[in-house]
Image (cartoon, rainbow, N blue to C red; front, side):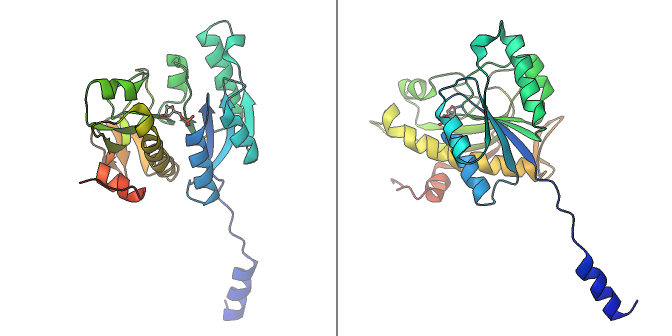
Amino acid sequence: MSDEQSTDTLNDFTAEQADARRIVVLISGNGSNLQALIDAQSYGELGGEIVAVISNKADAYGLQRARDAGIDAVVLPHHEYENREAFDGALIKVIERHEPDLVVLAGFMRILTPMFVHRFHGRLLNIHPSLLPDYQGLNTHARVLADGCTAHGVSVHFVTEELDGGPVVMQACLKLCEGDTEESIIERIHAREHLIYPIAVRWFLEGRLQLGPKGPTLDGMLLPAQGMRLSHEDAAEELDEEIDD
Ligand code: GRF
């Protein structure tokens, strides 16, 4: 083949675009974590595309955030279904219509049935406002403060049948000080969530993060029980927060 021929061949060649990885996000409320994912996507930092946002509540503000970003926003009111199984069955159908690679729970305030969790096993992530396995369940900030803990934070984890009990992928710590209240920490908690959730999603979509038989792996290495943990100082630095000595 002459040089000229090979150049022409290359000029005619159009690389096939790999299909973007597809994400479905489930919400029930404000959707600030959804917004962090939308923002990361708009900067080309999410590793995929949010193809649908589904809420069990019609008045969830996150639905508006989705619409503003041109994302399909779907309402599936849970009270219209006879029981948990019926709702989760309908939810599975709506999700699967969008053929997701990953399903992201972002403030989705529903206990999921085993059927649902098994269907998306290994491709279902959640974010929780505590350093899991501590403080599973609701009202984490109030309970942490009432116990006088100084170590708090947020966790991203794969979802299993145990509520907030699935293997942890990533954490960001927040040191509490005397005098801290729920109001005083909420912004720093959210900032940490918005920092780590898009990273975990990107790792998953890039194929770096997987749920193996022994637990989550990153680049083939088994993660420790606390996942990849950002210390308070590292998180504060990333977020340009003032660090107290
Ligand atoms: C977050 O604090 C998350 O940890 C918990 O629900 C809250 C959702 O907040 N699972 P938002 O709707 O993303 O603002």
